[in-house]
Length: 127
Image 1 (cartoon, rainbow, N blue to C red):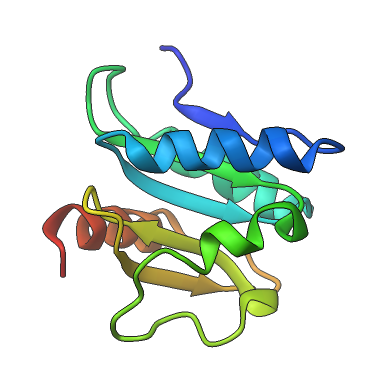
Image 2 (cartoon, rainbow, N blue to C red; image 1 turned 90 degrees about the vertical axis):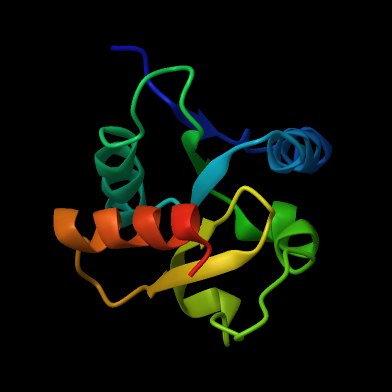
């Protein structure tokens, strides 16, 4: 099965920003994983396993260098707000209408499969 994981490039902030902006403009439900730690890499890989078929809306984006894309991340609507500190955020779940519907903090542990599925469902249901 083809991967539905987009890893933003490092070393080229303009290219990372352009790719994230393009991805946000497409009709996709996104889990955006932030960081380059082993937990971030494994979280992105694990989440991509539940992204479905290539024609389905679920996609995973991994942003290894938050500084490259923080200005774009901060423009995503967060009405609750869920993200209080971007430095402590491991993952945000973004609806097809580009609204943050869930987030997972960095707590030093890999999110469970159930927790990742919950993030997907919240983003899909606009909860």
